[in-house]
Amino acid sequence: MKRAIIVHGWDGFPEECWFPWLKRELEARGFVVEVPQMPEAATPKIEAWVPKLAEVVGEPDEELVLIGHSIGVQTCLRYLASIEKKIGGLVAVAGFFTLIPGSIGTSDDETVAAPWLTTPIDTDTAKANAGKVIAIFSDNDHFVPLENVEFFKDRLGAETIVLHDRGHMGGGDGIAELPEVLNAV
Image 1 (cartoon, rainbow, N blue to C red):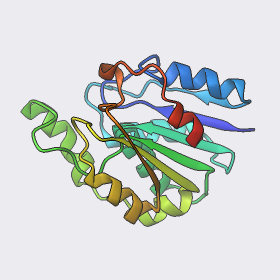
Image 2: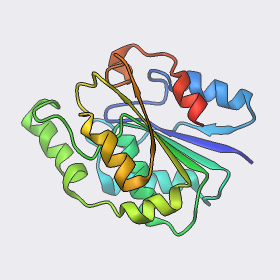
Image 3: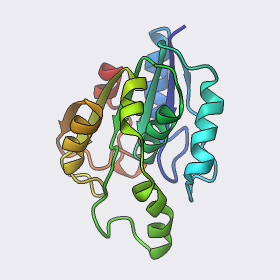
């Protein structure tokens, strides 16, 4: 059974931006799709988000594709580093290992972001368990610098795509459809 799980980003929710569109498109192609509400989305924590994703996944297998947006990509990578089974693939949208300095706002926001940026990810294990990795970026993302393109290539062996003028590709950017993600899946 082909499954897809879409993991929203910081302060996100299942009905945000392109998630409902992608869910409909994948379901029309025979996927079972889940878009869980991640816990305390306004203040995401690794120790809450990774177990939540593990709970939603249940038993991972090669029919599963994870699709993450922003901090949801970090969640997917950390989950993949914690398992001992290979999945079908990961589509990483606006994923990051670094952020543009000063881009995320208040000192409280910086405090929330710090563990995501400083707690190491076992990228070798994540890569081994991810199957194929496709990472999608925008050339004018106001949070994620394009240096992340090389990080995803080098650390995860990702196929990378850089879109023009799509911002962070989240709710605030008004993107209701993202065909590049559908094509990647």
